[in-house]
Image (cartoon, rainbow, N blue to C red; front, side):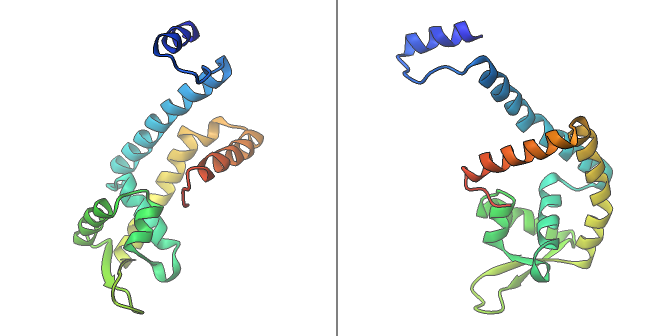
Length: 165
């Protein structure tokens, strides 16, 4: 694999050094995890609770917010969706009775997404299933020390991307 990278580097005139064997192992497995774990968690949520991973994330963030509501733009940032995509998600969730739209009380210019009682009930049903799935697919395969170390590493990497939690 590294020989191929060297050949490509030379052919393309790239001055960036190739990944070391250790870096290549980390990068390839991180990319596998980035694609496979969210898909597996989402499929489990869908199968057990009828919620998409995005819907679960919306319910979770609203449940943790003051008055169980957030500005649409803030919610979009927390669930890593574009403003137009969060609008479509909230429209569908609103039609399903899980959330409702409200004008922002202070200035009326912003739209809030608010968790309904039905949405909270759906989250209460989904949460233990999701927690079990997270444990089964990921956390149960790590020691306590590995979990602590990995948490710090991932936090540091995410902070460079400007993510919000």
